[in-house]
Length: 442
Image 1 (cartoon, rainbow, N blue to C red):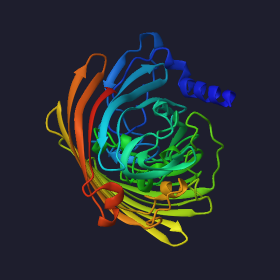
Image 2 (image 1 turned 120 degrees about the vertical axis):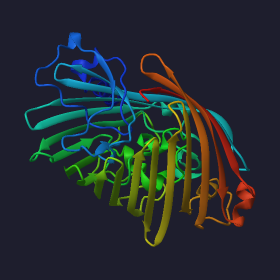
Image 3 (image 1 turned 135 degrees about the vertical axis):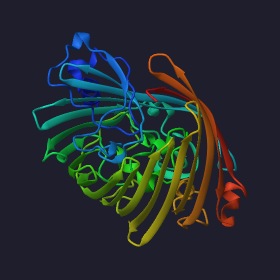
């Protein structure tokens, strides 16, 4: 086990090897775009200087910013990362460490402090006049939380110690992405691309929540995460796509099973599932996608069940306002259909003051799966319940030296549910989370 772990760590740190030693910090726009194409005369690495700037798009993507994996966001959705030119390479670094203290009310709630984190390193260079290469590694220290992650009322998905995680959000793996992408220009404003990685993200759903400007300050993962973007860390992905400024069409083969409980290991890749996605960017302010995927055996506790997902989402970004709205129809075979809705927004009132909110509505039948495994014989086992979550919050962003910033804020949530859940959750469950988010690029 140690050898593949060490090898993966070296790959993640050395995929941009030629330039890593000259990397200071950097700043990038919301979403993860490919680095700008270097000038024809390469800069000397010894004289390269860092640049605080948004990343440019892949060739021809003048109306979009790339999100996680190969997804697109509006071009105006501008998360920043720190860039440096060194030789033929453009490097980008972006990341955060997010400390939170939460009080999730009701009988199933908990009071805990936890830290989420992510660091992304990306390097891009031309391979020829019409060919560009992008290497990306993304890592997280979330496994230090422990297998059970952090409290998140009405969330469900994955396991810890063989027991279903309910009312908690699982931690991400140490290796969140290790991928490569090749873009081949086709005409003056379009390109064909091949993307793959271990792990990586298939062409299914919107950009993962931690890359969306609309979720920039919300300290909790959506309770609909396993309806929209849980495949963003799939252990085995190959995607082929065609992109123009307005349209992107792509298809993926990937591993449908969710990551296992060992958050430090390298899992066996498999291409047993597939997805298709079409994305439309009518202007720099809008991006919409429709996607469909068939997942083979995604849940470890129900290995004989397959899942189909139909997802539609749209994002808007202009004048300091970032919004995402999405719908997912999750069909668990045989028989059950579990839909979900999400709407979230962040508004920059000023460069330092921001307000944000999220609404979710989901039909979930896993709320008592853990109770059954623990031998409690719950009478509502397998019954689907409609849950709504309302979140509102505020963040104050203080710029720091060296392309750093810290956002300090709070988020409060209330829930709407069936009265039949009162015994488990109380009549009016609610939660409050205080946080401080240290950001490299912001």
